[in-house]
Length: 106
Image (cartoon, rainbow, N blue to C red; front, top):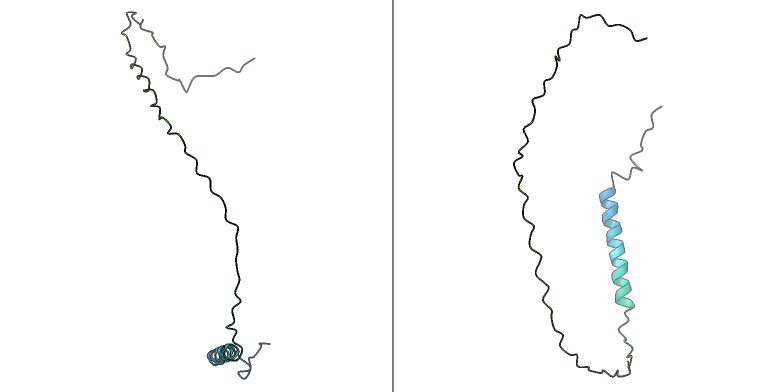
């Protein structure tokens, strides 16, 4: 069974009117409150603070020491040609015979 809304109690239909009326009422209450109950009296507060003594000290000028220069960059190493002659190494046959019979390990 579906619930039926009664249009008499549906707030969405009257939302704009309710919002405007409540805004007018709240602003009028604030205006009346500030109009009939103003407080313009200010209390005078005497602030007496003790005078602080300030001592001025002369600071001797400091000498700026220059940092030592950075160390020189090391030279780039150059590969020296080797006098050794490399022997030619022969690599055996690397082809794989797929059809060969494989014996099982013992």
